[in-house]
Amino acid sequence: MKRFYGTELPNPLMLGTAQYPSPAILEQAFRESGAGVATVSLRREGAGGTGQAFWQMIQDLSVLILPNTAGCHTVNEAITTAHMAREVFDTKWIKLELIGHTDSLQPDVFQLVEAARILTEDGFQVFPYTTEDLIVAERLLDAGCEVLMPWGAPIGSGRGLNNEYALRAMRAEFPDVPLVVDAGIGLPSHAAHAMELGYDAVLLNTAVARAGDPVAMARAMMSAIEAGKLAHDADPIEARDMAEASTPVIGKAFLA
Amino acid sequence: MKIVLNGEVREVAASTLSALLTECGFTGRVATAVNEDFVPAPLRDGHSLNDGDRVEVVAPMQGG
Image (cartoon, rainbow over the protein chains, first blue to last red):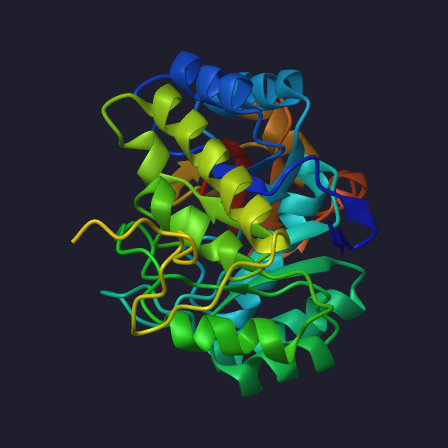
C-alpha cells in the first residue's frame, strides 16, 4: 500500500465521525470495522465543554486523525481553521475542503490550489478534497500535495462513482500518487468499485452513520473495500460483448 | 470591554486572550482565533484584546 506522507495506513478505510445516532455507536462502528483513520472537525466550544469528551473518545480509539476544514468558503477561513486544527489535534494532516457551491458542495478548485500551496509552505500535509479534473490535480501536486482526494459524488449524496471514466483516467495519469475517493459513497459496492479501479483508500461518513445499523454497515464497507482491493491486485479480466464458454467443449458427449 | 465571543456579544473584564479563556471557563483542549487570525496557544498570554474584537474558541468535534 502506498504511503500517505510517509505513513502507511492500517487499512484503506477512512471513516468520518459525524451524524451517528450516539457516541457509543460511533465508537463501536470504528472498533468493529477496524477503520484506521478518523476524520474530525472543529466547532465553537460551548459552555459545557462538549468537545472534550469527543476528543477523549477519539484518542481512546487509537486511530490516525485527519482533521478537516469543512464548511470553509474562503482561503483565509480554511487557513485559520487548518492552523487551529493542527494545534488542537496535534497533527500536520489536514483534509482541505473549500466549498464552492451551496447545493452540490463542489470544491472551489481555484481557492483549493491557493490554500494548498500556502498550507504546504506552512508545513502542513494536505489531503485536498477535489474534483476529478486532471489539470487541477496537477496544480495541486505542483502546490506540494502528495495525496489527492477526488469526489465520487457530492457529499452525503450516496450516489457512488458519478464519473468512473474520469476517476479511471486520474488513476492512470498519477500511478504513484496515493488517491482516495472521498464523498458520495452510499453502498459497499460503491466502495468496492473505487478499490477495483485501483484507488488506495475510500473516505466515507454518511453511508455508515445514517444507515439503520451503522455498525453493520461499517463492517460491510470494510469487507467491500478489502474485496475490491484484492480484486484489483488479482488483475481482473476485461469485459467483452459476446459469450465465451467457460466449460471446455472438447470431449463433450453427442446427445442431441 | 465588549467583544464578540463565538458570535455572541459579551461584556468581559479580561484584557488578554488567555485571561478571557479563564474568565469564560474554557479549560479544555481548545484553539483560538481573533478577528479571523489564528492565535497559537503560547501567544495567548501576550495577546491583548480590544473593544469589538471577534474571538473564536473552537474544540474537537465530529466531522466527515
